Image 1 (cartoon, rainbow, N blue to C red):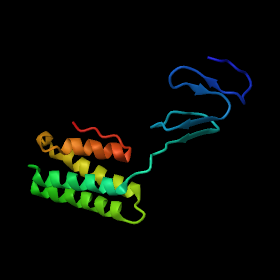
Image 2: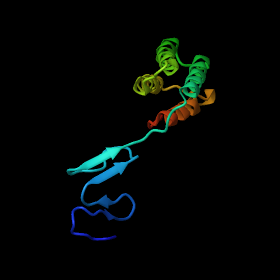
Image 3: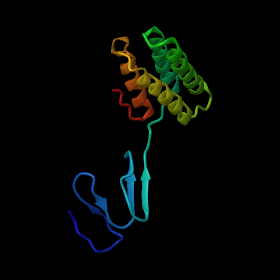
Length: 138
């Protein structure tokens, strides 16, 4: 590690350590820096919204084949339908898709049903990765 007293120079250390002068942190999740003159950014690669729409449709179809209660299916399918509709827009808003997808996942979590055999969890993980969100299903 380089030790510099000049506040305009950076100090780079081991894993995850960057300090000194103005600090800029890119492509990291969560709150990781404290102080002044700190910039944090995260880049999401451009999305293929058509492919995302296809994945969401496959997810919706897997939900319809599952043993989730009819009421919960309707809620989940409604959220996913709205996400699919948004993905098909000329200028889709990623935040709306993420909100709808996360809402559907919350309902799945609440059902506490065994759904591994339907492939829903694999599809959900694939979509979450595409959307750049964390997905933890217990």
